[in-house]
Image (cartoon, rainbow, N blue to C red; front, side):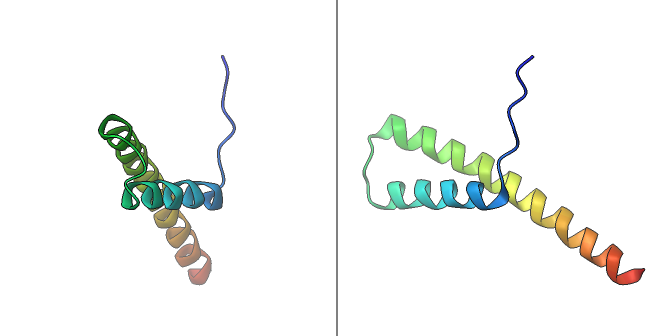
Amino acid sequence: MNAQPERTFEADMERLAAIVAALEANEVGLDAAVALYEEGCVLAKRLTERLNTAELRVQELAME
């Protein structure tokens, strides 16, 4: 089974920014725009989860 290495938070943020820029510039057709939007939603969810996890970890460390 091919396990893909996890992308960094920063790499995901850069990709999301590129998606937003492409969509805002109307650089792609409708089908591509929908695919980019879907990819952006997945990235946004992943980034939010990672931020929440990091916040919880910082709170735990502050309590120690």
